[in-house]
Image (tube, rainbow, N blue to C red):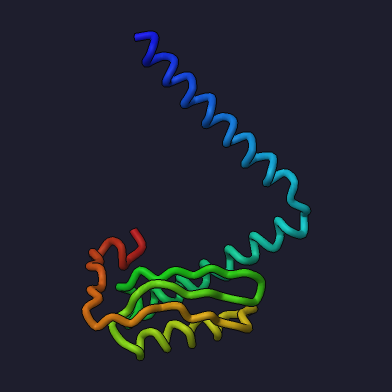
Length: 122
């Protein structure tokens, strides 16, 4: 019993230390750096939303990482056409000047099934 309590105490203590480190790192960011993070997140979200709204891309699990005016795309699609379309949509997003298209093409890639609630946003 004491062994379990010690293990739990150590686990929770470690979690609190890590949480404190994360909070102090976030607190050390300048207001400009925080604004950049928010802007990057908005751009990522905008690109992912565009992918999800496109019937040729919505079934794929694509990733986007934005750093300033640069976007890196990842994931796997079935065709070169889908890969190129994703890059084109990302490059057309406001504020994106360069796209690093790391999306892989695999003709055996299986798009995920989406239920009607997911498509409707619910």
